[in-house]
Image (cartoon, rainbow over all chains, first blue to last red; front, side):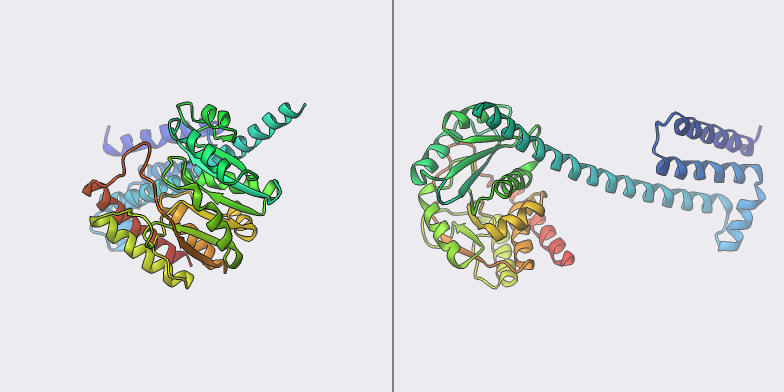
Length: 115
Length: 231
């Protein structure tokens, strides 16, 4: 069992896992699609190792694994930034909801008092 | 509510001070409607405020001064108040100056009660002083008015400003005071200041430690840089 078999198993497991999460509606489509793509790329590279080296040569990177590391890191950074952005949006929304709840609570109190 | 004036008091865990603030405001402005925005306090702030005769907007969790204020502006807009006064819940603002703030609204949309404008003896030192100077200079340029105290939370707003801030009031730290002025200036509102005297805090300690002050300075730079890029 070589490193390629290992990558193949890893790719299969992650694709299956993502697919399952998506099927059970545990994951929003927009996130699932991203991870599915990552899993599929892993699978393809594992199933056909020469592709990685061909890509490395084509882009002028010395070796395949280097290219893999570089692209992998880049993808992770982008995903992290995206998540920060999503959290900021959610915080804004929950803040607006909190304000609205406070206002409504006061209006309810005043309504009860007037009755 | 003859003059349709709303006094908004943001408060976070100020049970020992907020009652006196509400009472003092009501003494000065008997016709104004006083609303305390309880920003997720864990003490009896809301009860004390109600006991002193204020209405209370209780936020379910802490959202920061900016969020608390926006809730106040939304309330003012929803019920058609002509003018809003913002007073801190910790008792450092003397309500005696509220009529002066309201009076200055005659030829301005936002009036700041400034602490270093000659009245009183409020004093800061070190990095914090530098930070406040920088802010003052930058915002004076932006608003076309000489402002000396841009972080003061003692302010008055007219209808135009309320309409603007009910929609767009920044939540970020420093945003609530500094960036609000940038937003006002960008929207073409007239910002001015009048001198006020500060009372010593009745609770809490002023944050004057040099590490804190330096961090504060850094955040000021960041806030200024951001607001410049956003224009």
